[in-house]
Image (cartoon, rainbow, N blue to C red):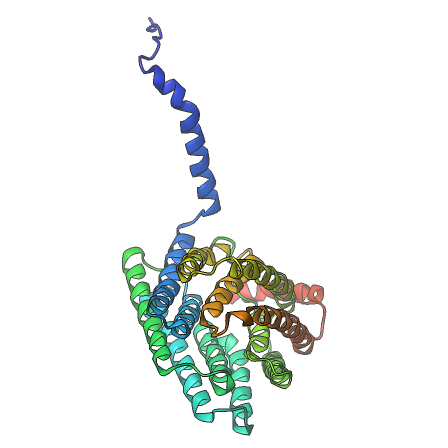
Length: 371
């Protein structure tokens, strides 16, 4: 015979059930917001690689070094390999480091935008576009090297002690990447990740690399002629959004423009609200681990978070706090010019509509799979 049901003696437990349900609902919501282990691992890497150099430089009252360290740390996080061994992950990091060191040294030696600079800058940009076909490491190493070349050749100089934070950023990235791999193994690909588009023919790669280099170099030249203090920002936009595929490039142009605009507006509010360096440190450290959680589906939000974080870091590095408004206005101008040039570059590189490119990619995909 079934036993009769008895009331539970823990009557206060029944009163806690709504609280338990609320706690479980919050837990489930947080799991949906951060659904995968790969995202959490990337968040940890971004937090460590950006946070340690930035916090160290800020506490030592070297804001220029803090800015450089945070920027290099972020670049090393994007220069990582998924589903590969530790050797492959280290190889990308070494390629990025060598490219940036070489570009920085050449820019420092040239000390100005003279004719030798434009030749080397154009070669580096063309190589960055061409090396897309050989993988992430060669492309990112050359791309970041070109940015370092343009940054050090004519931008306001950094103190020699600031460059020690570049070394710190690379050391932290290497240690963090090694610990992550030893504990968890290869970095899994993010859910929904699609391999970057690829061109089929040799002449298509030449056309893409030429357009990639032309609009990026033109952006720097326009910025210099307009007297912008950070003209390299215009160049960065085409380098980031132009991919070897028409549809992906046009989509990233729109998302980059929208996301950076949102980020600049938010940064303007925060910069005029946060005045203490400690509060700025907390803001940067809080934003850094959120960046990889937007990949790969929300490129606009990822771009917005990067803009907010870097502008806060730039604010601390400015000698005159009153120049913040000029920095914000200049960043908005960079967005319009850079994305406009990227659109021109996409037309020069592909010369066809995104719909036609998508159809061609759909036709070519079975052949790629068969290989």
